[in-house]
View (cartoon, rainbow, N blue to C red):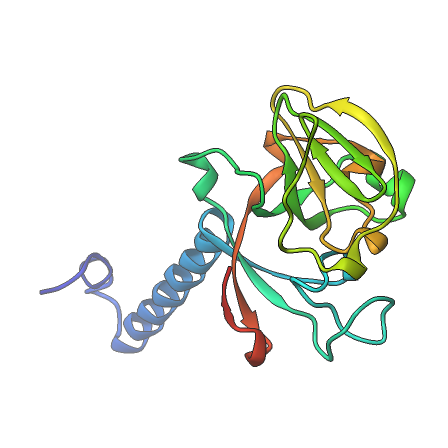
Length: 200
């Protein structure tokens, strides 16, 4: 059975038909990869120690414990079907204040701590949500800071992000919550280095 390309190129010389067939095949493959990256799954690298020890960055950067930075995959379509949940590791675009206050901006990876309407506070390194201490089993004792931040209410449609390594994380405590439209996706797997491969 002949495809549409064969039918359209039937009068051309054999060499031209082969070249066009290859071109169309490559174009479709590249288009499929770009579509998957744009709407389904996209890879990211962990460049800083803000998510240690959950996600590793590479030595000799400050606070990094591994030889190689973790490479993660983010699900870009899941939040079209469900809302982000507390505890999710999220890829997102930072607000302008991140560049001003942290000297970095662009795409960050942090943990979602506060949901729209939550009252968030931090006292002596312990996070409080709606007046109650937040259970954070993903933190090691050495990763907590001793900071104090007064209670603030997270606006509707906004989310509060924090790194697991609180000492090394410039996050929503400094530049505020982010709107829903800044969220790119949820980290669901580490695909490199080999010793870290697994689902989250």
